[in-house]
Amino acid sequence: MIVFRAPAADQERYNRLIEEHLVEEQASSEWESLVEARFPPMVWLQHRDRCEEAALEVLAMTRDGFPHVLEPLHEHFLYWAIDWWLDGVIPREGQSPEERAQYGEQEKELSDLQDVAFDSVDFLHVDEIAVSVLEGNPYNSRLGIIPERYLDLMPDDIRRRVETTMKEGGP
Image (cartoon, rainbow, N blue to C red):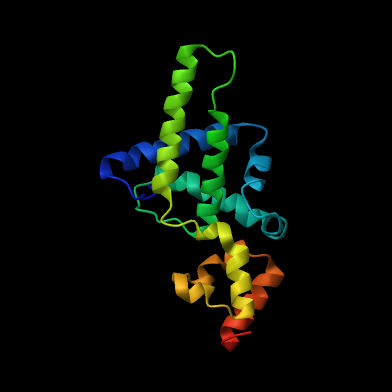
């Protein structure tokens, strides 16, 4: 079970919500393109297998009894998955009031999930984190960001440069 910043009573409900959406997507013919769209393009091209594995790990985490805390690669995938699901529950013209109400409930539940799922969204700013390391900018230390946590979300060439820069102690 993925552990969220939410009351214990909501943990299972949020995990079930994620599982339901991912199982539905996995059964569709668009699964690979949906997974691809949720990772940085260069990371997908260079590490497709790892990205697919991370998506399946998120699904597996919702099903077991271990208290999982997501790594940035998983967070990135889940953030964009929830964002996609939210786009799908926007009420459309011509829907009945009942359909609109149902979409409104789904939207609220997904928005609540997105609010509790992530302690921070630093994983959305990996490019800035990498540049700050390469330029010796105090961006990282001021905000308590640990660049090593985000290496999996960096293209290989950038990751190698960031690792070298961190090892050598600066740009």
